[in-house]
Length: 526
Length: 113
Image (cartoon, rainbow over all chains, first blue to last red; front, side, top):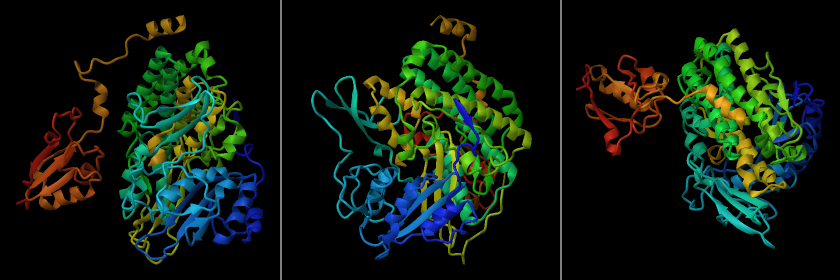
């Protein structure tokens, strides 16, 4: 296990050179987000340059516009690049006329899932005719189904990634209804009975049209729905969304409210890592270990309720600040015991050979695969990719107290488990510092409207327990949302799951790998 | 495995006595609102219905309908009108018919009818 500071994780900053290569003023972009317009004809070349740049990673890719009620309204493609060494995000905007754009996933493989989603939601597709997966909308989504833009001229067939069924292999369907308390998810498993030959997922069973429902609402009204994008990541998603709205509204939350958010975010990380530990025990058949981890989980959830009034920390984040502050005394009283419960369970697990043996060399993701697919969070860090937006793109209170970023090298389930345990310890340390500094509710004054200003959009981010959560918000003149893009970490990391499952694993390893990824289906299908 | 056996013996029983006995942690749970009819007017009822993000509140004439099944106990109505809305403290909401979760609250405040 390695702990790295943000400077050690980075190479040299490269934004000025990058902007110069793209034909922009190299001095542009004083703020944390640099937005540049790229003509559709130049998009492919720009993506080639950005994908080849060592310090750039494709963090998100989404569309807006394409309103079917407005004839000829172009779809605008936005690619969000994390320039972690520069501590900036670069957003490229390209208006697309017609129904095709360059096949960006041929250059940057991390763009493929978004190409599929953009086709479902906006009806435009990458050139070249490659098969696209169904990722968000269900098969019964006809032309009148609520979408963010125009429906595709031709509905996609029920397609999924190419896979091989040959020899003694057969396809084993599993889900979408699984065991009690587990989200709906369909696995298409190609197996010879033991080895996993191939695997694909259908995640659209939990699509609720969250982004579609946000349109026309004020950011404050929308926050209620954003928190419910994935219930186990309410704080991370809400923080990213609130930060995006605050960037659009130019509102700066007060420092005590930011510390309240950060305490809630670290508590969210703690209980999620405890829940992942319990799930790992369940998947390895270690029932007594599962009970021990679940005792820790329950204590942490009760601590959340005592500190913030909600077991899953809903209602803490507000646009411009925090609706609730922590009960400092309850946290100081309860945190050592609740974390101690997790630590003792983890120590016992790491001393149990039958448990460690099932984790070691299982579900391996290489560093190269994690980078290529744009993975984030503990999954990427366990493979040696030290991306953590608390350190790479710090906002208060993390800029004045950067966390130590835990990383691994082996990229297997055991490395992910160890990274989670190291992060839990770091969260406890951070909560202590934040409590010392003082945290409480409060908010900035928000403008009644945003009339008279042309650029009404903002990008926000937070390091959720699953990794970098992003949100992008555009507002109209009355301050209502015209487009909100929510990109929880689950959206990125599911694309690494099938890679991890294929890496020399057997059928029974899959639940173990899924527990170590600890993602949500709700977050990815939204 | 002996490690886990000894650990379990040391840890003892941790499950609560609920529902035989109340669980103290329940006091920290967010619960649906309770309304004071005498403090509710038509205007206030409309305002509360407008801010409810899960459409659990609707007004019909001089009655406020509250659907506890739709309520997420977010607390927005309580924050908006602390004199008319309090936390009910009820979290045992199971019903055999969803209609039993809908409560009729008469609007008895000044200006309510």
